[in-house]
Image (cartoon, rainbow, N blue to C red; front, side):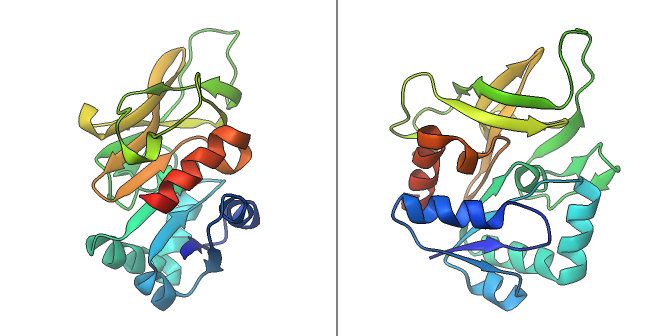
Length: 202
């Protein structure tokens, strides 16, 4: 059973539907005790970093997430949920959960043809092609992105996959049992289905 964390931001139902579509079981919860006991966690999210962290802290979910992942429970963040796993964000100048050694930075683009947010379907490069979360992907995997801030790993070892928008950025990050993807697997059709299926089996 995968528990999808409800902290007031995110496409909860669409994530649960994608889990069901690939043969898994998902439930949505905002109860810190349930999060502490969960077998596996997904932290989704759309919106501002500062609001996300405030909601996690005020609800008691921040501590619940940290306690459970410290025991080795697998967690996957999606979009804002992935950014919240990092140490700090330039958006609102706020510290994150600090579960992955990475930073969340603002796009400062020089090409006038490129707009922010970075939005649409883009290919990714597999920096850790042998990682369980990246197994059996179709050729030229492409995913749906929509974000104005991007993740940057402190160490290359934490970068699962990458994408380029004027410059390369981390599309997927990982540290031990915690991972996050900047793109939306639940909106990425067969490519996203494989990521969710891999997470179920991770």
